[in-house]
Structure formats: C-alpha cells, structure tokens
Image (tube, rainbow, N blue to C red; front, side):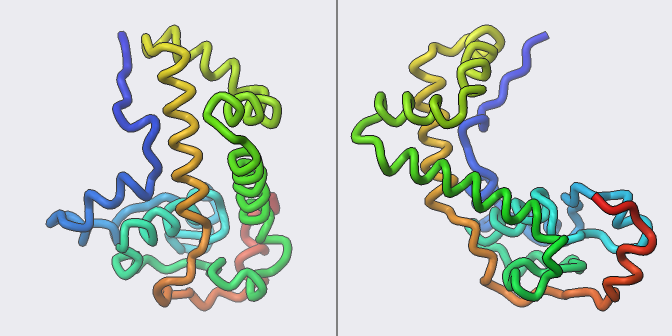
Length: 184
C-alpha cells in the first residue's frame, strides 16, 4: 500500500483558504482539533486554546480569513498571552521559539542551497525525513528539499498572530480546570 499526500508541502492556512469560498465553511464551528481531549472531556469544553493543535487551528483560520467562523469556546485565548497563566503558555512559547529558529535560518541564507544546509544544521533530523520521503514517496531529494523550504517559508510568513476576531472564552475558573485534570 502506498499513501500519497498531495498537500504535504502545504500549510494548514493554505488548506483552509479553500473553505473561504466553499459552502462548507459553516462546518468549521463543529470541528474539534484540541490536543488535550482528556482535559476537555473532564470539564466539558471542546477546545483548550493553549495546545499546538488549538494554536495551529486559530492560525490557519486567520490566514484563510475565517476567524469569524471559529465559534467554539476556548478555555484560554492566546491572542493575549499575558492573560493566560504562565504554566499554560509552554506549547505557545515552544511554537514561537521554533518559528524564530526557522526564520533566522531562512533569512541568513543567500540561496536555496545555503538555506537547506543551514536548516539541516539547525534541524539535523530533516536528513532522515528526506531519506524516508525519498523511499516512500518516490520523490527526488531536490523535490523534497524545495518542498520543505517552500513550506517553511510560507509557515514563517503566515506568522503566529492570533488577534483577529473575538473568541468565546468560557468562564471556567483556573482552579476547576486544573483540579479535574493531570498537569502536563
């Protein structure tokens, strides 16, 4: 069996742009992306708002111009990180740090070849990823490198700004949120 992913070098924001002119954009409010479903189940809320999945969802919808369709309630709103308890900002901070590392590498390089070499120095696991993709996807090394560089340039350009539309922030006190769940 061979899996083909025609969108492997496409950001979530680019994919969500298809929904903007689609009759299905009203289904966005029914989707679930939170990476902490056990936490959500315990307090009866669909989205935590602080995990990488929630942040990626909001970023993608912002890029696609669909923030207004994101009507699900969130426990926390990272569009104002200072209002989110420090202990809940770890994944957000890690995403910002990673994006910053990628941006520095891409901006330092003068050409695609140099950008790839610096990217591999910063993220050595990319070499294994390329090898695996060459075997499984039957793509050339150059095609994969170009695809990854393009994907990362778009990701950096899209940014992680989440301030675009007011969210429904659910009034769940911090104590009840953390008392019912394992910390981590």
